[in-house]
Image 1 (cartoon, each protein chain N blue to C red):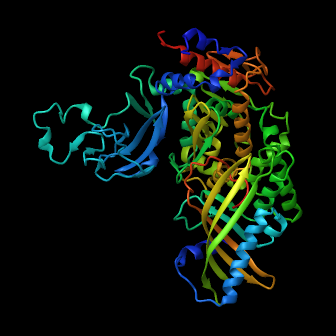
Image 2 (cartoon, rainbow over the protein chains, first blue to last red):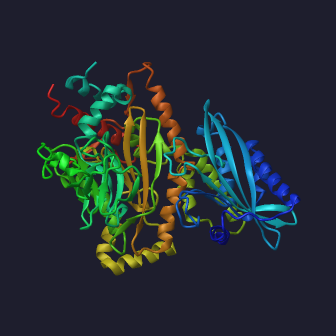
Length: 178
Length: 440
């Protein structure tokens, strides 16, 4: 997995691949669905979007090329993601009461690379409003996805999320993924 | 109203404190004046400014300062202010100033020790009172700056005890951060996480050594971590050790925290003993111990590893967890707003696995996505709101009150208790600071 983070770092992050309309559409639909599952709290389905060794990654620094062994805002494999769901859904997770609401808008979807094996690297931008304890907080950032082509459709090997204000200060804790 | 010394002293009783100490804006201003702008306040570690020209911004009380390393390798702490018209000299949180500070307003330049170097059209000052040798025209420095083994502090008051005397027994936490490295050096990693607490700075400090809260506040993450541990075991995989940082909350439960004693020291400092297996028995730890023996010899290494500090509070501005290489500095912004900066350290020449353990704690407990601190922050925010109410004027610190054990100026909590001794201890120190030399 760390290999994929490094692969993303080695690639030209401004490249645009010449892909078919079908591929472009498939990438867009996948990202919209990913965001919808987060907004609708469909955790089993959302976790199933990731490969078994997939990672959700929010780096602490812009120029970070690796998540493993580094300070991160998020660096979670399937185990830690499962734990987050179990914790946030626990009746005594009192800072999650009442539950938050999330609303994502995903846009500017650019397929960066279509690999010979059909895997895709996709860049996009998102805006997300979180409503928690009667206040709205806004998060904006950049997604970079490594999508692995499988018999079961695309799966996320890495979802890299770079917040525009990653350095903080954080007036909140990000208890759910963006 | 303006507070008299007598009224301030009346806010703290042996087993309770008045809510105004946490909510009143005038009290907050007095705290800045009499505590944060008088005693020694942490600025930063020397490894934050490794190279000549490197600088890092900090805050002492309400005042912006910059820590900088000059071309002769000397570290200075200066006010981040141009003596000309008051503009900030450094505006990025960290950076490299090069050979000198350059003010972006009128191009005055200063040596990195603060001395005025030059400005354009210098002759305009001929025959005026501007004197290049006069400190008034240098970047000024706090009344006192000093460091303890590379940890830099500033005091805005000419008077008071020196840094070492102020730190007293709490200096052991810094010793531990360094001495636990087989390479006998410690280095700060990357940049810090900066978190704003929507609550009073004292509520944070009180929480840190409050052993009756973790089993309750952190029950949900404790249970979720236990659940994950079980699943990993069922899958036939090895359970990562760091999950115990979280599952311990559930294992110990609401009332299982009685085995961890607390100690109160002079000047308001305090510590928590023993919690979280300071020395687990696993191959990585054993390899680390071997390297410590090699570096120090067995006797000295055992002495270092035997120091029983899980968590040290250096009053009023730091929370340090030496066995996990974590350090947090506290910058109060208002009665109901507190900035914390959370750092972690790498022990020179320790096995990578030992670093990874402290990184895991940093991530799971202290990062902006933490599921531990999230519940603390919410409780503190709720306390701040609750204390606005006049339903009661008092905050209770009654747990095991009257049972503290005083010996040679050091206070120990009652054995086998989850005593609120550290909370009482800190508020009593607060009263001392707030009423000392107030002169009204």
